[in-house]
Length: 434
Ligand SMILES: O=C([O-])C(=O)C[C@H](O)[C@@H](O)C(=O)[O-]
Ligand SMILES: [Mg+2]
Image 1 (cartoon, rainbow, N blue to C red):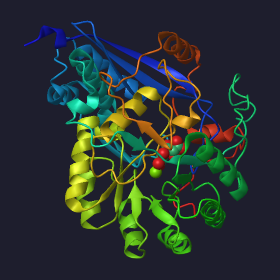
Image 2: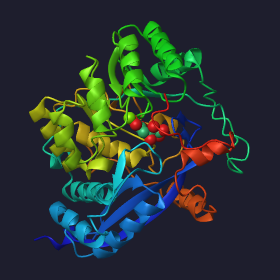
Image 3: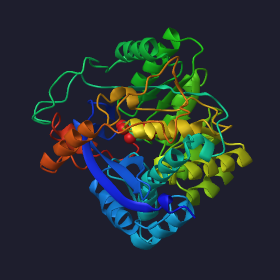
Image 4: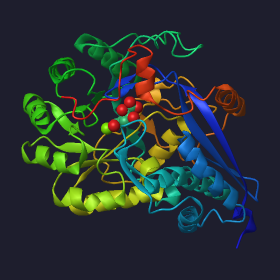
């Protein structure tokens, strides 16, 4: 066995990255959001990169795993999961409440752990690819496409963060506000012209359903025949979901998480022919059986951060294929390491039937030396060794400094708290909101 493939050291770097004032049903994005950058350094001197959520609960799980890894072989991904089970807390602990962001569905320690392990799994694959001189997609069985399509991720948003949100964060990022159909269409037009995106997803659950129906109608008029999606993150009742499905059935590619949880989604699905997609009620293996048996969802949005990495994303794809359920890809705020990982795995999945989500165009900062560029709405699949991205150490250090100097308020994502800067009485809304 090649001792160069053994983990020598792991570096964990929490960072804060700038995020625009994007609105969702829980509130608004903070001026800065936490991410964690994982570097796995092998005895052979190669560095593998991974990226995941950076809130405190993820950092707490990442630390013992990083400490336990020296001596572990980077080819032993199955052993990585077993190790994480041992060192990252009691896997039987569950919490049926929603997560802090309120947008990921029910939270369990298993899910948190998988989100942490995902960054290490990606770093293992990146390091192994660099050792072998092969791209990650070859380690995953080879690419079935040379480019991966992405969709425009449209948000209602303000022009700037509210006064008092953060001392450095009142600068306008140039996108302007989008709080009505005209604003949404202008944003979509800029996305299409700048990046070539051909499908559009609007983050809904922000305004009353009729206003969001009007926004989708306006998009359908501006981009006739192009795929449209609406995602209120579970903000609607069954009745409201069916009303929206009825109003928009002729133009929607799918409706994403209109209602919260498998039971309500099953009831919506029974009343409409519009496909329902989810990144909230099917986010881990134990949630699949009931959702598929009840035909509650017709499309699962994979996310390698949720599912425990790239190989488990491929496993999810195989399950969806077996059950005739469609596959798309979810995203929330992330940087270029994660986008490279998303693109590598997406390239290997034959049944990735829809353009993938990505927040990336909203991110003005990164920790890689060369930003990804979308052309014709797609990213070319890199054939360079590993993920094909290089760490910008100065950028990483600067974003870590911001994290270290933060008084703690930006280190945990809390969209409701950010909303209270503009609306002091705002409370995390009870669902359904409408
Ligand atoms: O598709 C989704 O549900 C998301 O992307 C969840 C995200 O957290 C998004 O809503 C956000 O960041 O506001
Ligand atoms: Mg969603």
